[in-house]
Amino acid sequence: MTDRLTIALAQVNPTVGALTANRDRIRKARAEAAARGADLVVYPELVVCGYPPEDLVLKPFFLDQVRAVVAELAADTADGGPGMIVGAPWREGGHTYNAALLLDGGAIVAVRYKHDLPNYGPFDEKRVFSAGPVPGPVSFRNVRLGVLVCEDMWTADVAETLAETGAEILVVPNG
Image (cartoon, rainbow, N blue to C red):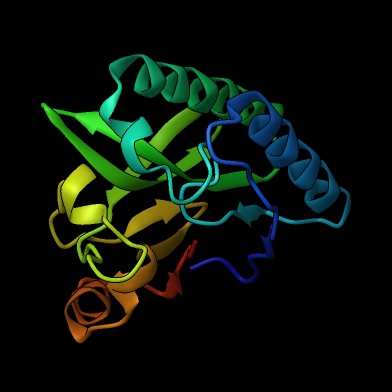
């Protein structure tokens, strides 16, 4: 474990579907966090597309555009500044997930999928997302981070698994 890890929480207000505007908000918050010495900037759940994206995540063109924005943001981290955990709908293996992506060193270095999907009131995630497996920790600059997305923190399964598999810090992006 490192002696010190400075984490900035970016409470930006993304707009559903406004990928370019959301990307610009993410970049601005990262620049502010970098000026304050942050090693990692953590953004809200689904910050890239806005929350809740509803049926937008059913459109392949939209998911392609999300992937392109995430690639741009990952490339930004090649400058040696803070890494980022951004939330985005993520298509993999024929499924679409509510994901948290760790960006650092110019690349997407880890992806974690939301395990516990809400399906009550205004939340309709079981209809548009697949549930991910219980995640393991991710390594970030010699620290093992346990990344849980929103509801994953509401039950013991995910946090307990992360703790048992060596997570040193739990990071929970929420919408």
